[in-house]
Amino acid sequence: MLAKRIVPCLDVMNGQVVKGVQFVNLKVEGEPPELAADYEEQGADEIVFLDITASYEKRDTTLEVVKKTADMISIPLTVGGGIRCITDIQNVLSSGADKVSVNTAAIRAPNLVKESADVFGSQCIVVAIDAKRVYVDSDLTDKTVVDTTKGKCWWEVYVEGGRVPTGIDAMTWAKKVKDLGAGELLPTSMDCDGVQTGYDLELTRTMSQITNLPIIASGGAGNLEHIYEVLTAGDADAALAASIFHRSQYSVGEVKRYLADKGVTMRLV
Image (cartoon, rainbow, N blue to C red):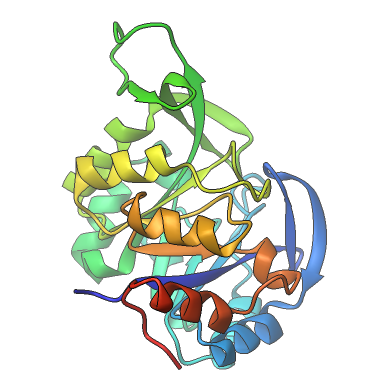
């Protein structure tokens, strides 16, 4: 059985790591290189670095900060934000990233996923999907409706750092990017982001079952049980978290030891 992964997330704005609640009220948490190095020492399997305002501001990823961060760690680094074309991907990889995460650009030009997978390999292409629940009364829609613990819903894709709704069904989109060559999916529940009440298990489980791609669950980690739930009942392959690590509620090592004690296959330091 493949080991599950614990992935600290660095949401970066103006060169600093920030964190908010449901994509707003952002507070500075630290410097990307120092935090990344600390999390590797704690036992993190990967680091995700997201330049969260790059797409909205129509600018490139801050490559200088990416390079400084990559130079500080040896574990895989995934970088997203402001990636619009093959050249942008090449620049990010040349700055030390191992994988790239595309979101807004993939929605605007889906063929970017296919082109980038063809050039760099599917294992290098992560499609991030920022999704928000839309509740409905029936299944009579072209969306993928799931009967959740809170009622029937589908998930709408948002872009530009969660600012712009698209009307696109997240599950339909996930299947499409799989066909285009995406190697991994990073769904973030906008409803759960920063709230620390648990991941959206229906979101991750449904996306996993529909695509059979590796899923990095994001949005909602507040305690150890939440991470255990998303890696088991939520069918996720990796759990991404930010607040609990930035604010020292738990170390990565504590999370991994807890999971291992509960029978989850982990890479322990």
